[in-house]
Amino acid sequence: MHRHVSPTALSRRTFLTTASAGLLGATLGSSLAPSSAAATRHPQRGGTLLLGTRLDVAGLDSHRNPQYHVSHPVAALYTGLTDIDQQGTIVPGIAESWEPNQDLTAWVFRLRKGVLFHNGREVDAEAVKLNILRMQDPAIGTEFHHGALHSITTVDVLDKYTVRFNLHEPDASVPANLLHYPTSLQAPEVFDTASEHPIGTGPFKLVSWTRWQETRMVRFENYWETDGAGHNLPYLDAIIGKPKKEDAVRLAALRTGQINLIDHIAYIDVERFKKSHGQQFTTWDLHLGGVFVVFNFRQGPFQDKRLRTAAAHAIDREAIHHTAFHSQGAMLDQPYPPGNPWHLESSRSLAYDPDKARALLKAARAVGTVIDLICAANLVYNRECAQIVQEMWHSVGFMVSLRPLDDVPLRETLKKGDFHGHIAGNSYRFDPDGIFERNLHSKSGYAQSLSGWHNERYDRLVEEAKRTLSPTRRKELYTAAWNIVNVELPHFHLHELTMTSAAAREVRGYQPCVVGPFTYRGGGIRTAYIET
Image 1 (cartoon, rainbow, N blue to C red):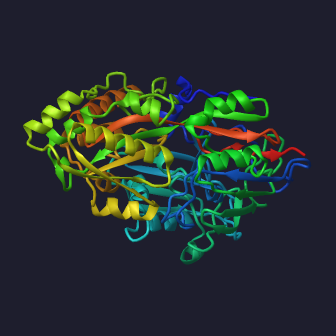
Image 2 (cartoon, rainbow, N blue to C red):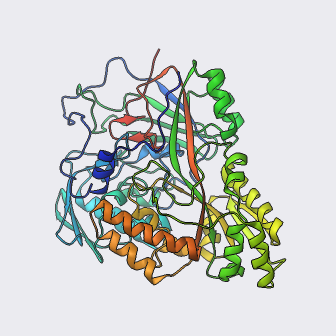
Image 3 (tube, rainbow, N blue to C red):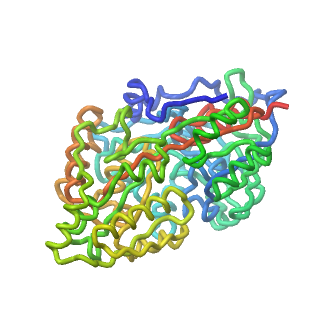
């Protein structure tokens, strides 16, 4: 059975509630019944999910290593103050309500009573404060964490279940930034051992983890969510994560019953698999994010705008579309695809023009310029895009060396600025500030680890959007800002990232979020079970 979910089919209602989630925090949420002491397990739903993923986390401490809720099995260990629903709307999580002050410079979150860490400690305002401070610590949190929490200056514990975040600037995106990815919560008393055995708040708790081999997790019996009939979630007894880098190996494992759910089918295999095996497996087509080129402004030849422009003109998006993505997804010149409410209809980017690229290099006396291009080693599409870009740049006169890097070396290389170009990707951002501010604003630490670009007009436009609640006005501001990016070229967007996930028919009650995550409020792995 093939289940098609349009990657961009977010309704206007979803758009409006997501865009103004901060003001609606007290009313958003799923239709689940509240947790209660009388809740019991569903008498017939359980089993073990065998989850095959294309990625594995670099380390267990979620404050040092973001746990990607699409492809890292250990993301099931964590939840955050806010959550998402199946449509990607921000909804209450550990916080049951929130509201900002009038000028959006402070946010008060009220916690759900009775939510527990896996060691039995209750989640209270003090624990939330300690988690935020730890993620903000330059020696601990990653640039991704720092970008998400950038606007928070201080955290006040108002009472046991109420916490206030004080900001240095108005910020409408706070609820989206307190989602479990990347702002996950851990038991503070075991921070020091989180790299060996983290204690989270999620629907599953850790048994063991061996990177790139196996992750074992069991049901957290005191998880707070229930289904509509009052049964405790999750239904599953256990999850065994089996990361498999090679697409063919992962797909073969699904077909032979070694695993019963995979996060991603290789683009080259999608249509063939649906045609040959659509009656045996359920599949979902999902929007995941985007892939783009980063030009380093901190050092190297791409400090020269003429060379950046030449490199952009040398890129043929259509060739990337057919060669790396096998016609899956859309050719994009921006982060959000057509059909998504945040798609910028008036975006204007440079067209493929290799002759102009050659002329620019010749005029700049830069033919033969050596380029150090880096990419993530563990993502097939990333490597393939990098190889295609390498050849395109070669063809117009650059001399390009390509360095695929594992997760930790890649982060260190970006932090040092030791590269010229970088093939990067982004997961879906539930609030567009997560793209436009976090990836490109000059005061964002994460943006500085990418291009290091600084443009005052761009910064002002994004800052205005950040303090604006009107989706229409925000979109106008982001369009103006993005057209600056398309001229100055700190980034050059290449393509939409989509994902086709598949499950054996024995996996019941499961449906991924439309933008990829396997765990979300009232669904995903929380409501999955194995039919026997």
